[in-house]
Image 1: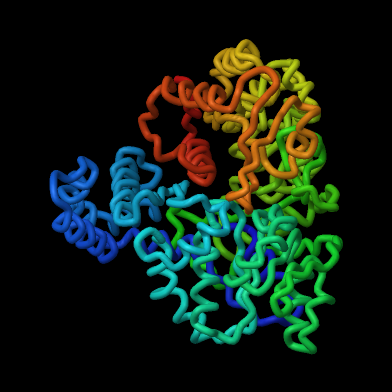
Image 2 (image 1 turned 30 degrees about the vertical axis):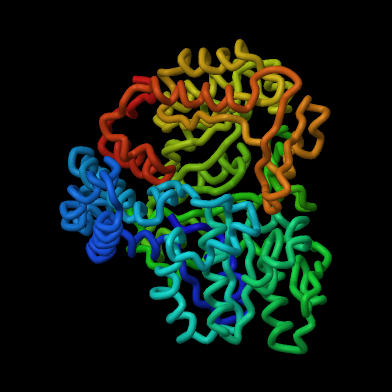
Length: 558
């Protein structure tokens, strides 16, 4: 599934007459890694490394050398399975999934401890340290992205001769890749302005001006919504070059790092423009496209959540009729039968209108999104949503301990949560829940209450993502640690951190919360076809296929 940032920015810039080339380097990178040539090259590197090492090889390297030729021979076929209707045949796609996962393990080995997975990336260095970042962007021994960008991406940028290269960095896992691309562009001396943006960059807006060295890798950073800022940046560079007039910008002015005021404007609500993205290269049998029905969260009070990244933006909701028009337009233009709403939480009001309109249109689209356990999600509404094509809902359960719910200002009630899960299941909707252990002050007994709730509703939960509390920059806990009995342990070497280690005055500490989450995952029943559970896109596709075939939804704890 493409990230929504690129088609959103592209739609806005093209609407204002700016020539745009958009590239999803995530899909290009994985499509390149998962090829016979790259796997054979990884094998050659491992053999060369093994021949220069005295003593016995590690079991991991020995297994890779033995199994590598088979993986290289099968990897292209495995990709083809995931891009075809065979994906839905669990017995056929499970071996393909294993081949893809093992192939990524193989190509990662020469760069150990870096590790690329289908849904994760283990960094070989602290990616929130500017010193470590500045070193690894040019390190061919540990930087798995370096050769790919140098050989497959940089020549295209040279050919295009852009005035601006914008690099979207939505998460910490993207930092090494994004900064590596900036390093190569700057090192090649290309006459273009390199700007970075995305949610992760927005969360670093107070840190970046204090880390002047990081601006060797880019010229400016755009924080918060990028549509207007990127357009103004293009206009300024095409005009007098005065960047002080560009809103939401942090930029290098001859060695001095300057910041312009943050301004918020109404969202343009344009149809996302996916033209130019290689929708056939994603590892899905049919396109799964992201959309929004709102910006921000209509609750926006949860103590663990940094929605809005501490910025000035408020919740704004798109007109439900316009949302449906966009869904149908994407279905018509790209053949997209699956839409994933990337909202923090879709409101019951929009869900009601969207479902009615989609039902009138014949429910041609399978869709899903995040929702709150809101009393407005009545049985009638959930049934209407299912009739309108809703196939999966993602619920922020977080905790089932009432005291913890109140401490985190979750605004949910256990009877309502219970009723919604069962009504949604009765309507034929796949229920995915998120929950975690270790919110500051939570006791072992309260963590057990969450586990008890989940097991008591095992007939109404089809998948889940358990985890441990993360202390994230700009969350209420991070902004008011004393209120929650938290002491933050800041590490001066991690000068670009957005996650923090911490101590608690009472309750579960950080290691114990991690242990509880790990232990729960370890005792979960083994899935017959685990490939359908590794990503939201796959769960949506699987739920939709089961619905089309009239088959029951499998339960998570069975």
